[in-house]
Image (cartoon, rainbow over all chains, first blue to last red):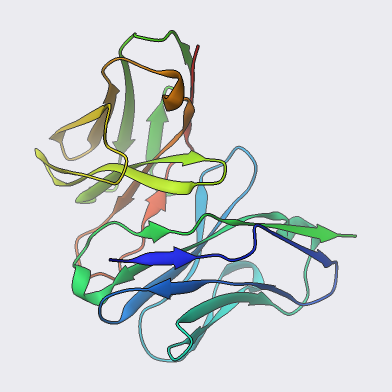
Amino acid sequence: AQSVAQPEDQVNVAEGNPLTVKCTYSVSGNPYLFWYVQYPNRGLQFLLKYITGDNLVKGSYGFEAEFNKSQTSFHLKKPSALVSDSALYFCAVRGTSSGNTPLVFGKGTRLSVIA
Amino acid sequence: DAGITQSPRHKVTETGTPVTLRCHQTENHRYMYWYRQDPGHGLRLIHYSYGVKDTDKGEVSDGYSVSRSKTEDFLLTLESATSSQTSVYFCAISGQGDSGNTIYFGEGSWLTVV
């Protein structure tokens, strides 16, 4: 079975400071990992994904994520937070042995960037 | 935007009435999904389709049915709406290929059952 945990419901960070949104996962086989962002009253927007290769993945809006196989983690990071980054962030996973089955999502982490 | 249109975008309906939500895509993608989003639960899969007339259940499929008669359309039906089905419903699509395919989401349908 596949599962994703986002241990923090809410993350607060000051504008200009680095931010981290945490994600851990459990899958059969190797993972395909995804991050999405949701702004109020909108659908989810794809940010980045890890398939294979370099453990540091760069995505949209200056976000990046680091895949750590030993810790089964895929934390989302940004060096300098903007107020406009305030949103709901979702981590998702699919195992490589799962075929094209639907993604399993975490419960989301609300990021609040304070000016 | 991924070429996904959901309709209606907002609906208020009464308990016990049938409701159908429509998802239309212009990407010719094989896979289509219906998720619901609720506070404290994140996104939960209701049903998905892997081709015309090929569908399967997700983790919260009770009370819902789906149909896909054309590649571009995926319908979600609440046969007899209940207050517990008040939620935001998202359609999503992904293409043919391996497990690394990205899923793209529509803008959501807000359903209130009174």
